[in-house]
Length: 133
Image (cartoon, rainbow, N blue to C red; front, side):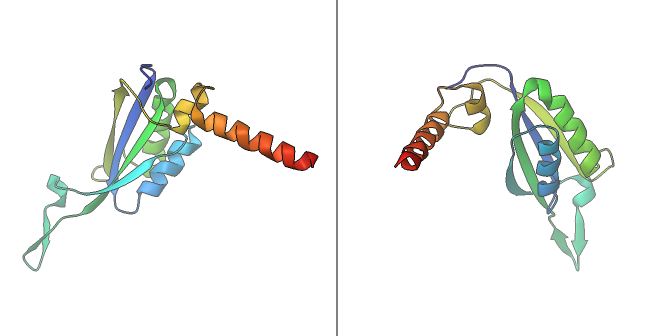
């Protein structure tokens, strides 16, 4: 478990089909990637109906784990590329991360003792052994 307090979770909620644009923008700003989760919206702009049936718009929630010092740049580029400054297109927020567990790429990049690095080193040494024979 990593208790370092220099990570942030960027949560971006956008219309269905826009999650990939959020991930692309965050990667351009230096993030390693993101996770897209599907959901439904219930905001005031989305209470529309068709033939008397309420339409519940589908949303994509993008979770991006990033280093705190890069969070502002990532948020700025997401806002710019996706257009979140316009009403009704989505919203986002940043949460400080207290603990991280598991083998995430962002954690492994910071910790050379990470199992992912060890596996990559083992694979590299196996390939070197094969080249020798």
